[in-house]
Image (tube, rainbow, N blue to C red; front, side):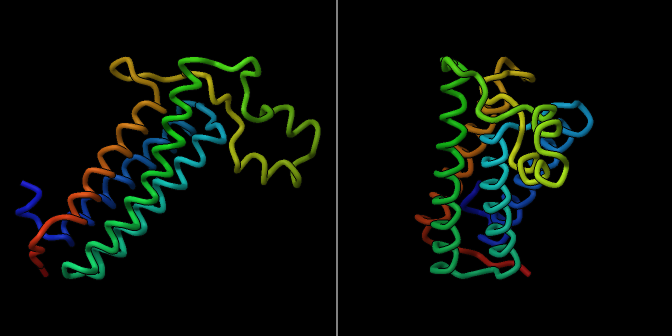
Amino acid sequence: MLSRLSARTLFLLLFLFCAGLLGFGLYLQHFRGLEPCPMCIMQRYALALVGLVALAGALHGPRNGGARIYGALILLIAIAGGGVAARQSWIQLYPPAIPECGPGLEYMLESFGLTQALPMIFRGAGDCTAIDWTFLGLSIANWSLLSFALILLLAGHLIVRRQVRRWY
């Protein structure tokens, strides 16, 4: 089925996939009260970069060589994001002696004040080992790892496929 779709369509679908995942992450943060940890924030950055490269590919509509370049960029970013997700999944299974990978939000606000705490808040304040939400027995980090694996497969497909069809 993927071989029937143009590179532009695949890039657009990948962009929508990334936007949906980022939107769901923001929903969990702002409406369910789940604070992202620093590793979650790094995964969000990687997902946003994949989405932006995919959007550029969708708008550009490249031919074979260009689709391979976009695919290679996406592949590299997805490897980095997947590596962070794999590490977080690992530390959730085998928590280290020091459970947090960053100070708590309350501590940052009390100790540093709002102006100094804002950059720290943006970096994330949750506990990287905590499993606050699951779906089908998998944590957010596990789902993130699966998502990056799917992105890797799609990027690999874009790199090795022979014919790229265009649509306008």
